[in-house]
Amino acid sequence: MDHVIAELRTYVKQKLEKEGSGHDWYHIDRVVKQARSIAKEEGANLFICEVAALVHDLADDKIASSEQAGLEEVEQLLFPLNKADLEHVLEIITTISFKGGNRPPVRSLEAKVVQDADRLDAIGAIGVARTFVYAGSKGDLIYDPSIQPREHMSASSYRNEKSTAINHFYEKLLNLKALMNTNTGLRIAEERHEFMTSFLSQFHGEWEGLK
Ligand code: ADP
Ligand code: NI
Image (cartoon, rainbow, N blue to C red; front, side):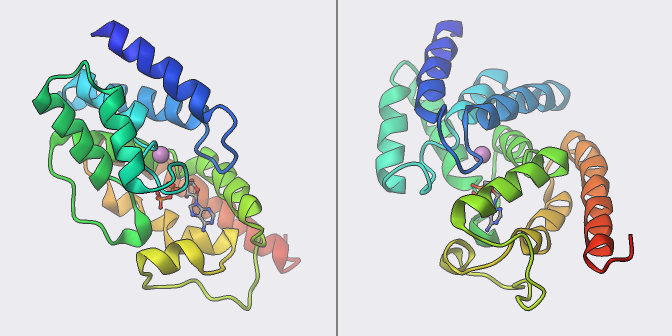
Protein backbone atom coordinates (compact mmCIF):
# COMPACT_ATOMS: atom_id res chain seq x y z
CA MET A 1 0.00 0.00 0.00
CA ASP A 2 3.06 2.29 -0.14
CA HIS A 3 2.00 3.65 -3.54
CA VAL A 4 -1.39 4.66 -2.10
CA ILE A 5 0.39 6.70 0.58
CA ALA A 6 2.83 8.19 -1.95
CA GLU A 7 0.00 9.32 -4.25
CA LEU A 8 -2.01 10.74 -1.37
CA ARG A 9 1.03 12.68 -0.16
CA THR A 10 1.51 14.26 -3.59
CA TYR A 11 -2.17 15.22 -3.82
CA VAL A 12 -2.47 16.69 -0.32
CA LYS A 13 0.87 18.49 -0.63
CA GLN A 14 -0.07 20.36 -3.80
CA LYS A 15 -3.53 21.12 -2.43
CA LEU A 16 -2.39 22.59 0.92
CA GLU A 17 1.01 23.99 -0.02
CA LYS A 18 -0.13 27.62 0.03
CA GLU A 19 -2.78 27.38 2.77
CA GLY A 20 -2.25 30.37 5.09
CA SER A 21 -4.22 29.66 8.30
CA GLY A 22 -1.95 27.06 9.87
CA HIS A 23 -3.26 24.02 7.98
CA ASP A 24 -0.51 24.07 5.42
CA TRP A 25 1.24 20.94 4.13
CA TYR A 26 3.84 21.04 6.90
CA HIS A 27 1.07 20.77 9.51
CA ILE A 28 -0.11 17.61 7.74
CA ASP A 29 3.44 16.29 7.47
CA ARG A 30 4.07 16.83 11.20
CA VAL A 31 0.77 15.16 12.15
CA VAL A 32 1.61 12.16 9.93
CA LYS A 33 5.03 11.76 11.57
CA GLN A 34 3.61 12.16 15.07
CA ALA A 35 0.73 9.76 14.32
CA ARG A 36 3.19 7.13 13.02
CA SER A 37 5.35 7.36 16.10
CA ILE A 38 2.40 7.26 18.55
CA ALA A 39 0.84 4.38 16.56
CA LYS A 40 4.03 2.34 16.90
CA GLU A 41 4.14 2.81 20.67
CA GLU A 42 0.43 2.15 21.12
CA GLY A 43 0.24 -0.83 18.73
CA ALA A 44 -2.26 0.85 16.37
CA ASN A 45 -2.68 0.11 12.65
CA LEU A 46 0.01 2.21 10.94
CA PHE A 47 -1.59 2.31 7.50
CA ILE A 48 -4.95 3.57 8.79
CA CYS A 49 -3.26 6.16 11.02
CA GLU A 50 -1.07 7.44 8.21
CA VAL A 51 -3.91 7.68 5.65
CA ALA A 52 -6.25 9.35 8.14
CA ALA A 53 -3.55 11.84 9.20
CA LEU A 54 -2.88 12.70 5.54
CA VAL A 55 -6.51 13.48 4.73
CA HIS A 56 -7.65 14.70 8.16
CA ASP A 57 -8.05 18.38 7.22
CA LEU A 58 -9.50 17.96 3.71
CA ALA A 59 -13.09 17.97 5.02
CA ASP A 60 -12.47 20.86 7.42
CA ASP A 61 -14.81 23.79 6.80
CA LYS A 62 -11.81 26.12 6.57
CA ILE A 63 -10.46 24.20 3.57
CA ALA A 64 -13.40 22.50 1.82
CA SER A 65 -16.42 24.45 0.53
CA SER A 66 -18.52 22.30 2.91
CA GLU A 67 -17.84 19.29 5.15
CA GLN A 68 -19.96 17.17 2.79
CA ALA A 69 -18.00 18.26 -0.30
CA GLY A 70 -14.73 17.57 1.54
CA LEU A 71 -15.86 14.09 2.56
CA GLU A 72 -16.86 13.26 -1.01
CA GLU A 73 -13.43 14.35 -2.21
CA VAL A 74 -11.77 12.12 0.40
CA GLU A 75 -13.99 9.19 -0.59
CA GLN A 76 -12.92 9.53 -4.21
CA LEU A 77 -9.26 9.86 -3.28
CA LEU A 78 -9.40 6.71 -1.19
CA PHE A 79 -10.87 4.45 -3.89
CA PRO A 80 -7.96 1.93 -3.61
CA LEU A 81 -8.95 1.13 0.01
CA ASN A 82 -11.30 -1.71 0.88
CA LYS A 83 -14.71 -0.75 2.25
CA ALA A 84 -13.90 -1.36 5.91
CA ASP A 85 -10.71 0.70 5.78
CA LEU A 86 -12.44 3.50 3.86
CA GLU A 87 -15.24 3.64 6.42
CA HIS A 88 -12.76 3.61 9.27
CA VAL A 89 -10.80 6.55 7.82
CA LEU A 90 -14.00 8.53 7.17
CA GLU A 91 -15.14 7.92 10.73
CA ILE A 92 -11.80 9.10 12.08
CA ILE A 93 -11.75 12.35 10.16
CA THR A 94 -15.38 13.20 10.95
CA THR A 95 -14.92 12.67 14.70
CA ILE A 96 -11.51 14.13 15.58
CA SER A 97 -12.05 17.87 15.00
CA PHE A 98 -12.32 20.17 18.06
CA LYS A 99 -15.01 22.66 16.89
CA GLY A 100 -15.34 24.33 20.30
CA GLY A 101 -15.30 21.00 22.16
CA ASN A 102 -18.78 19.97 20.99
CA ARG A 103 -17.90 16.62 19.44
CA PRO A 104 -18.71 13.05 20.55
CA PRO A 105 -15.66 11.12 21.84
CA VAL A 106 -13.64 9.21 19.24
CA ARG A 107 -13.93 5.43 19.25
CA SER A 108 -11.14 3.40 17.65
CA LEU A 109 -7.51 3.26 18.79
CA GLU A 110 -6.48 4.69 15.41
CA ALA A 111 -8.88 7.65 15.85
CA LYS A 112 -7.37 8.28 19.28
CA VAL A 113 -3.86 8.23 17.86
CA VAL A 114 -4.61 10.65 14.99
CA GLN A 115 -6.56 12.98 17.28
CA ASP A 116 -3.65 13.07 19.74
CA ALA A 117 -1.18 13.78 16.90
CA ASP A 118 -3.37 16.62 15.56
CA ARG A 119 -3.84 18.11 19.03
CA LEU A 120 -0.14 17.93 19.83
CA ASP A 121 0.50 20.11 16.79
CA ALA A 122 -1.75 22.79 18.35
CA ILE A 123 0.34 23.06 21.55
CA GLY A 124 3.99 23.72 22.47
CA ALA A 125 6.19 26.04 20.41
CA ILE A 126 4.51 25.05 17.14
CA GLY A 127 1.13 25.66 18.75
CA VAL A 128 2.17 29.16 19.83
CA ALA A 129 3.34 29.95 16.29
CA ARG A 130 0.17 28.54 14.65
CA THR A 131 -2.09 30.46 17.03
CA PHE A 132 -0.59 33.81 16.07
CA VAL A 133 -0.64 33.01 12.34
CA TYR A 134 -4.29 31.96 12.58
CA ALA A 135 -5.26 35.04 14.62
CA GLY A 136 -3.39 37.23 12.11
CA SER A 137 -5.17 35.59 9.19
CA LYS A 138 -8.52 36.49 10.82
CA GLY A 139 -7.45 40.02 11.77
CA ASP A 140 -7.61 39.28 15.52
CA LEU A 141 -5.45 41.16 18.02
CA ILE A 142 -2.54 39.55 19.88
CA TYR A 143 -4.32 40.37 23.14
CA ASP A 144 -7.08 42.65 24.42
CA PRO A 145 -7.55 42.65 28.21
CA SER A 146 -11.14 43.90 27.76
CA ILE A 147 -12.19 40.70 25.92
CA GLN A 148 -12.70 37.85 28.40
CA PRO A 149 -11.92 34.27 27.32
CA ARG A 150 -15.18 32.40 26.60
CA GLU A 151 -15.92 29.43 28.82
CA HIS A 152 -18.72 27.79 26.88
CA MET A 153 -18.73 27.98 23.12
CA SER A 154 -21.05 26.60 20.50
CA ALA A 155 -19.37 25.40 17.30
CA SER A 156 -20.46 28.59 15.54
CA SER A 157 -19.46 31.00 18.30
CA TYR A 158 -16.06 29.25 18.51
CA ARG A 159 -15.54 29.91 14.81
CA ASN A 160 -17.30 33.23 14.23
CA GLU A 161 -17.08 35.46 17.30
CA LYS A 162 -14.17 37.81 17.69
CA SER A 163 -11.51 36.77 20.17
CA THR A 164 -7.74 37.20 20.53
CA ALA A 165 -4.70 35.02 20.06
CA ILE A 166 -3.96 34.99 23.81
CA ASN A 167 -7.58 34.09 24.63
CA HIS A 168 -7.27 31.04 22.38
CA PHE A 169 -4.82 29.54 24.89
CA TYR A 170 -7.45 29.77 27.66
CA GLU A 171 -10.36 28.76 25.44
CA LYS A 172 -8.73 25.70 23.93
CA LEU A 173 -4.99 25.08 24.04
CA LEU A 174 -4.53 24.75 27.82
CA ASN A 175 -7.40 22.23 27.88
CA LEU A 176 -5.86 19.85 25.38
CA LYS A 177 -3.44 18.09 27.75
CA ALA A 178 -6.34 16.71 29.80
CA LEU A 179 -8.03 15.49 26.61
CA MET A 180 -5.16 13.29 25.42
CA ASN A 181 -6.35 9.77 24.58
CA THR A 182 -3.09 7.81 24.75
CA ASN A 183 -0.31 7.65 27.34
CA THR A 184 2.24 8.36 24.63
CA GLY A 185 0.32 11.50 23.61
CA LEU A 186 -0.02 12.60 27.24
CA ARG A 187 3.72 12.30 27.85
CA ILE A 188 4.50 14.59 24.91
CA ALA A 189 1.63 16.96 25.81
CA GLU A 190 2.97 17.49 29.32
CA GLU A 191 6.23 19.04 28.13
CA ARG A 192 4.47 21.17 25.49
CA HIS A 193 1.87 22.33 28.04
CA GLU A 194 4.57 23.52 30.39
CA PHE A 195 6.23 25.44 27.58
CA MET A 196 2.92 27.26 26.90
CA THR A 197 2.32 28.17 30.55
CA SER A 198 5.82 29.57 30.76
CA PHE A 199 5.26 31.53 27.50
CA LEU A 200 1.99 32.96 28.91
CA SER A 201 3.55 33.96 32.19
CA GLN A 202 6.40 35.73 30.38
CA PHE A 203 3.85 37.37 28.02
CA HIS A 204 1.68 38.73 30.85
CA GLY A 205 4.77 39.89 32.76
CA GLU A 206 6.02 41.84 29.75
CA TRP A 207 2.51 43.23 29.13
CA GLU A 208 2.42 44.66 32.64
CA GLY A 209 5.96 45.98 32.28
CA LEU A 210 7.15 43.66 35.07
CA LYS A 211 9.69 41.67 33.04
P1 ADP B 1 -10.22 23.10 15.21
O1 ADP B 1 -9.52 22.48 16.36
O2 ADP B 1 -11.46 23.80 15.53
O3 ADP B 1 -10.34 22.19 14.01
P2 ADP B 1 -7.99 23.89 13.96
O4 ADP B 1 -7.25 22.74 14.55
O5 ADP B 1 -8.44 23.77 12.57
O6 ADP B 1 -9.22 24.22 14.81
O7 ADP B 1 -7.11 25.18 14.11
C1 ADP B 1 -5.92 25.29 13.41
C2 ADP B 1 -4.86 26.02 14.20
O8 ADP B 1 -5.29 27.33 14.48
C3 ADP B 1 -4.61 25.38 15.57
O9 ADP B 1 -3.27 25.54 15.93
C4 ADP B 1 -5.54 26.15 16.46
O10 ADP B 1 -5.12 26.12 17.80
C5 ADP B 1 -5.46 27.52 15.85
N1 ADP B 1 -6.70 28.24 16.06
C6 ADP B 1 -7.97 27.81 15.88
N2 ADP B 1 -8.86 28.75 16.20
C7 ADP B 1 -8.14 29.83 16.59
C8 ADP B 1 -8.45 31.14 17.06
N3 ADP B 1 -9.71 31.56 17.17
N4 ADP B 1 -7.43 31.99 17.38
C9 ADP B 1 -6.15 31.60 17.26
N5 ADP B 1 -5.78 30.38 16.83
C10 ADP B 1 -6.74 29.51 16.50
NI1 NI C 1 -5.11 19.34 11.63
